[in-house]
Image 1 (cartoon, rainbow, N blue to C red):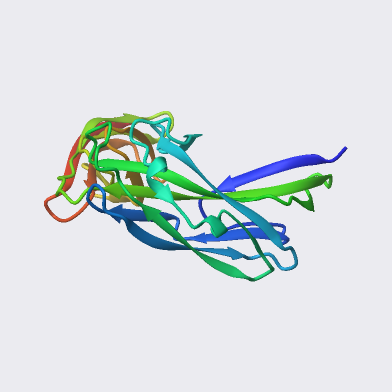
Image 2 (cartoon, rainbow, N blue to C red):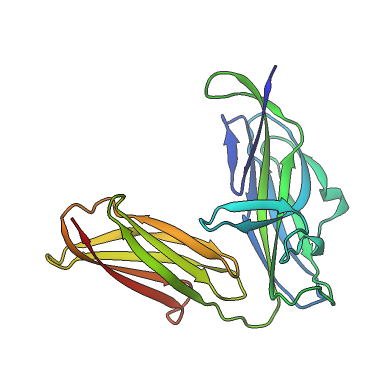
Length: 263
């Protein structure tokens, strides 16, 4: 009996170069007033070398967990959902693409005049799902059926100016794992993206250790726990760690410092 595999991601997917969907952009941002419609295009491409794909469009909700991983939910189940505001053309609900063929979809969002909530920002996810599974082989050589689903994150905000604010809640060093553990919170009412910049200095020798900047994405109210590996920490001694969260211009920086010993 053949196994069935369902694969999902937000970017380009290719399985053994036999089947794949490219959906771009992976995130679509809308800004409009209540009762005003706004439309943007997304492009779906069949990157398969030989397989035609039968595709269907659907909607859902999503959120981040504290590690920044995506969690999917049925449409209109989260309080900040805008799935019911989104529409596409009837003929675009189901369509087929030959190998290498692409199709533009018009995605329209219309926030209602009278909303049930007072939230300034809402989200949803638009799925493009393959309806005709194709034959493939897994790592063990077993025959499987592969079907693919790709998702585009939808963001909507009203036209009001909303100030972004991120606050660091905790910063600790785990010597046994050579890990800086950072906790921060998005205290604004809008999604906030940015990068975490970390520098570590040996206060005895002045030697500097730089950690690769880490990109993050948050939604309003998110508390994010991030572990920053310090793999090249070798010398024992006293250290100062400086962590900067950059989420906009020069006025939107959050910084914390930690002194610790590595023995």
